Image (cartoon, rainbow, N blue to C red; front, side):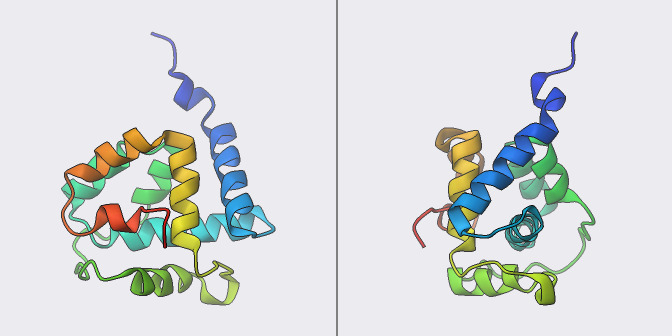
Length: 141
């Protein structure tokens, strides 16, 4: 069996995703977009059990999936799901001195992710998760 296309073009697809994030957030560099994406993904992951997080990760493209599960302390306490203001502050706290994530970063990353993987795939991944995952990944802040 040949290597699946999703793996053959993982880097190019990730670059396109970062371009989507830059366009939606108004950020100017790939590094800024990367920190924004990582902050959003980690903020979401902290609220899920390992089983739930891995179920969600299956819907992500390869590089985003790797970023989502990297350096994970699976026994860390999980915060309550909370609200968008809490999530935004948490996402903005990653590498605080080098984080330029705008206040709408979560909605912007959600819109970029939906553009890349499609609403149906993301919504299916969120459907079985507890808490407020649909609200987290909503494009309406």
